[in-house]
Image 1: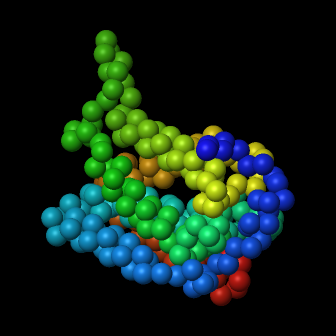
Image 2: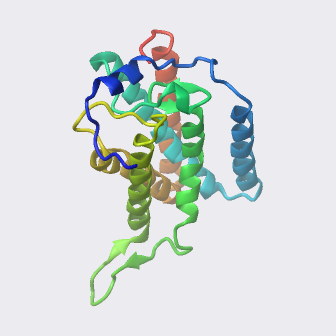
Length: 222
């Protein structure tokens, strides 16, 4: 049921080689429904003027896109990505490592993570006897990262190959440390930045995403 590392098998390589990026072959109406749900969540938070929640969602989602672009570039250079999704598991593949359903989930993951934090985000755990303790935002990020890494391990073991790991050295541990921890650190910390720094972070992040997509997709790199 759970797969903890890539196996380097020919089956995994063949599945990756068969991926049809941005093909509408498996397209169906769930695409529209999921998009509607995401719009509803964001506009509800905007209507309530919960700007910090929106910033959390956009911060993580931007990091997600930068990682997916980097993963697609790795696939172009070395032949295989660090992670990928199969044609059978989705209605639409955006880049070699991410499908529509997965990407839309990540558009909400930052919001979920931020809302799960204590109302007092200055809270520190284990702060006793003069010890500063551990920032609740860091603890929350680590917990969410671990949960997502374990769930990805489950997806890698599904019969329709929802997730594919080719490289033997890539699996739950590197996913947890190098991918999901940064994702949730962005969601939990960016909203509390000084307004100018927060704006600069989000504008730079999303401008870079837009630039890379505009350049690399037409060139056929991703």
